[in-house]
Length: 433
Ligand code: GLU
Image 1 (cartoon, helix red, strand yellow):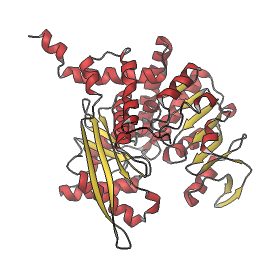
Image 2: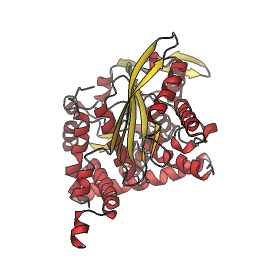
Image 3: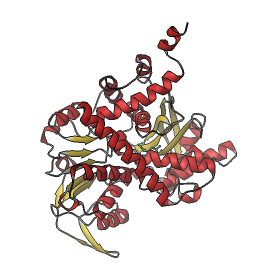
Image 4: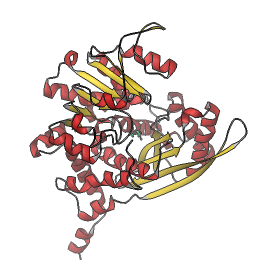
């Protein structure tokens, strides 16, 4: 990852606002408000290790803006977590929720930790410890966390349980992405990958893509990347390259994705395999680095790992005409400009990965109503939202000759602007003296 100074990632993130505001209906005052997170909490979490020693870890929760509803966003566990990163991620959540029109603002949390070095018991103690520190800052009507990089349903379950103990009542709506028996929603597990898949299905209609002739490279084989790969492969798309944090594999003829997933689940490794039942055989493939994966000659590139992967240094070498951003913030502003002016279509993160938070919203609604929906209903509602917004943004970008990213920010700004203005801005007060 490219190292940016201090607040760099957040400044880059909000830097998108001014350009997009030219295409949005938003009061200057409302625009200014979005450049400042509403509240930031930094905590120190004492973690008792299995060997009896004590480790102090740093965690964050940032609530960016709640004009449109309670704030919403995941919690990531990663050794590179910084406050600037969490602020940027919270800002993207505000925009993402507005882009898909769900009634939430944006937030994000993180703990600077290497989760793969912890035992399951240490992970549980850490997750519960984090909630004890942030319990007054979150809540079903104020700020609702969810999974993100290296956190999962189990972690959400522990967190919900800890919060419920503190409140002395069952509080499933405080967190989403929970295990289904603890109030999780059907269809939440694959929702992020599925949202990106629905974007590609809409593009398939517009550009008359032929799945069997469309080669796709996916950087990152975590929850979102894996499910996107599975759904696209099911429809006949050729997944020719995948990678995880250790490196990737490439085969121009395409991989048998269910085999890759089976092997990754079992061994945590991305390897070129073909499995029959539980028996896997190594198949031919080239070992490639994460950097090489981005530069492959493919039709669709899906960055599904971390931010700042596509930079001004590698953007000129990227050959894919379509980039679907499943990761949050994978493309730097400089790279975005290079790629957009060379004619690439970028389906921006705040739309392409919004499936996760959309189904999180459904989970929250189900928790609050106590009525649970079948998986097909969840998928159908998700599809309607993603297809509607994809087509609106694609249309706006062609009509106004702007990138889909600028269109997405303009859409988000108009929606957030309306909520802020409804409470009154200078324009209102000076006109109603
Ligand atoms: N972490 C996911 C994201 O970045 C999901 C957030 C949520 O469900 O609240 O969109």
